[in-house]
Length: 314
Image (cartoon, rainbow, N blue to C red; front, top):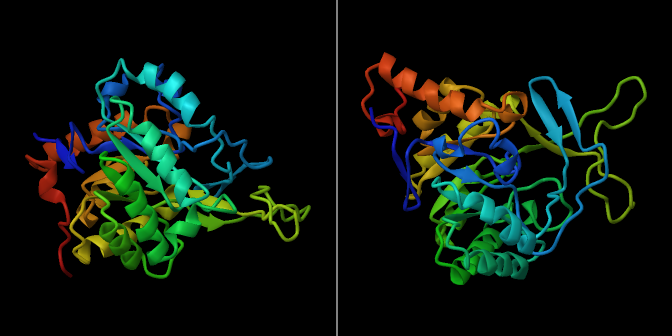
């Protein structure tokens, strides 16, 4: 059986990746399994300068999902290069670093610094985080802004670029097309859905969220992930694949097992990313990899790529 896929010029031994923001920088899960088993390792977001993130509470479990408003907390690109990259040197798995900024210049400067490392195989441009008041989703909800930031990063690096898209838009195909026109090499979708939760008894919001610049209070909203968003992720991947945008897609959102992953591949994804499931089961990625192999053996599938975009008409 062949589980190998090609994504943005990278050869992955299997289609299973980690989802940014759920796997730290790899070290956090290295005691649970050999990271070399992954198709690719996608890191937590990296910014130009350290970011403290949002006030607590930052997470709240809901029915079939998790609300989070971490606020992209991270120690900055210099720390990442000095501390995280040396640890990852011991592994052969492709490393994809998620990057973000408040301005286009910040995206560019982070990309330039990361491009100096030979251990980094690709960049994932986050233009879709709903948990910050500037940058993030601001770039991912307007086609012109999307194209501009992607093109700027493209001009700053020769590394493959994967653009992470938001489902919080009216026309995700238009945003995907803009990313392609900005010279993206691949797309990853979807990021979290904007949501909130309230304590019925006390009336208190379950998460603090980013600070509203007008009221200087929490916005009480965050990103919903987990099984609840699987149908939305499938719809978005299917729409973009059906539109014929000629770059590969990484499908993500609500994957907890191999059949979820296969659904994304049938919708048009080349690879998949497992995220929130790893909080419940640190071996979720490995279980999905093994489950895909079992699925292929059971149904006589010789090459995982045969399933891409294969949906039967009703």
